[in-house]
Image (tube, rainbow, N blue to C red):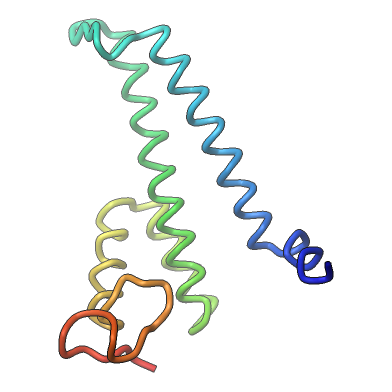
Length: 131
């Protein structure tokens, strides 16, 4: 019972709740957008239709950047909180190029995109995770 209580109080649990709430918000927004401006009946010359889908695409982009930014933050915070905060800010504020750079550097340095280093059995052939 004590471990469950610690989990409920942890920031990891709170972050998971935030992401779950965002998923619900995202699905509600997507449903409302489909009702107001169906994707199947795309009128590409309609400004309201285009603007609505552009705003939703921006929301989706920020959601993806925040998600990878959170992964970067939690994986890099083992090394340095400042480095972790920089990766989070870069992924959220600068978007895809920084997210791609994080993934490329993660593969180079660890040989895997796994969230845990796996020694010789995982990752790219011939690469050992850095310690």
